[in-house]
Length: 119
Image 1 (cartoon, rainbow, N blue to C red):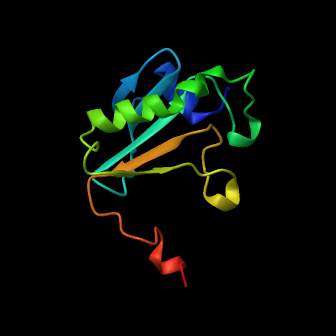
Image 2 (cartoon, helix red, strand yellow):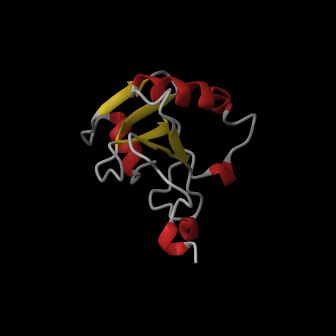
């Protein structure tokens, strides 16, 4: 997609701190991390959100969880745990409309995830 920042990162037009890449997925460090480990995982094929995915049109998502597991393990989070966040839609906090998952960890994440909003 022409104006998508993640598509430009995947294409190498915008620099990123890449941590993983294969034929379907690209992962890089978030530029505004909320934890010691904060990695964004994006499909190379532009998909706006979960709501646009289909089994036929998005076969790369069959490898989503194994890819997350590999990246989290390489980031040292296998035994410590991590949070996997996917914001879907503007009201949920999605600001870039290219599907992406946040792998967040490296510290005690606590519960509830947003204590100031849990009231």
